[in-house]
Length: 485
Ligand SMILES: [Zn+2]
Image 1: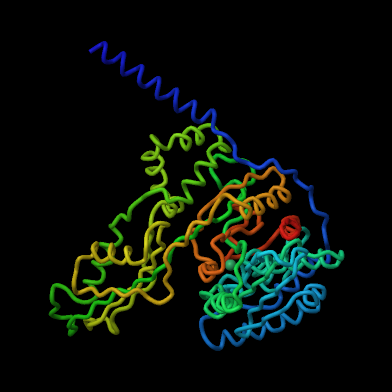
Image 2: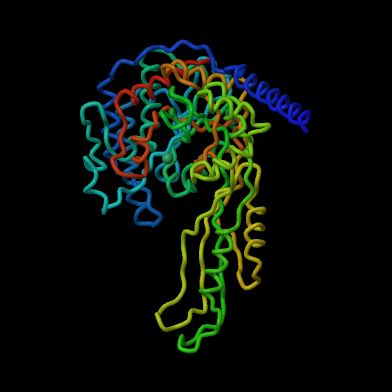
């Protein structure tokens, strides 16, 4: 027995030695690129962002709303043409769907495959019940000391405007971007991108355009959000989760509620929803998360480094911790939420029809079809009919994290942001990128916005705003990127 204990202790010591060794020798994969210094403040550019916010290009799902939005977008385009004369003189312009546009810039190397830069010009509404909590009205574009307020200051007008500012500066200086660049600005990302991104992608396909890489919104420069990393951490989204809304329908005899049967359409539906809620979708570390953990470990404080450098043995523990928080659970599992329920017309009448919509966000490596089957298997009730609603998509492909495109983007980030760490990440929400999968296999979801616990609430929320400093960094980032060979 004593001998066994001795061997056991030795084995534990060896194991700990290996684990400490692995975390101690975890090599940093960060680029050694010089930060170019803080960009100087450009008051005109600040005015421009403020003015662009004042065009209330709000996306609604109804026809009336669309007409209003497109009118605002028409005015916004006229304003852009006046504000960025060099861009519009140098580029070829396509306008489409009543509010979207594509700008084609020739580069010094005019034979180069273009890079495709995406942004959307629409914004979400500002809830009227929340207006009293806004420091300044959401479409005022108010410049308050070092901050610009309003819808679009983070999502996503600031990106279109920063790109135009950067390109205008290159062209004014008598230069061209080093390679061909395309700006594609959609009009309806916030309602699915059917008229904007989808049509733009079809247009580019018809024109036989293939992009060296695509950049769109997604992740950003996080501050104090990635556990164990104190430095600002630029997360570049190399994949996004899939999306499917599944409608559940139950039809059964209705009638008066004074002599009810044991079950009815509403109760059968409720129990189906309960079963889906109780079901645990597979938990695993999808490829983008594995890449994040393996590259991120070396940048983390020792505890996290120890944990993530030794996933061969610590993964059950990591999974257990991630399961406990809805934000981290979404990174390791398909998630779902019941978003719509309908049944009944009167309090004393048993409904003969009950429906519910459950929205699924599907983990990288899974499929819409597989998720549907899993939901059906969880419910196991033939009275419940399942239908996948239009607008679904499988999880995206995972973009490569080696090669020229990846290095170019990382280099521009290191040049722009002081002391930054760059890492691959996975986007949990959906972006316009899903429409562009035929244009390039290298799709990166990154916006040069500093995101922290203080400002992220503004995205689709109250007091959306950007610090002038960060806006200057945005412009500098795009300029650095466009000037890269
Ligand atoms: Zn957006």
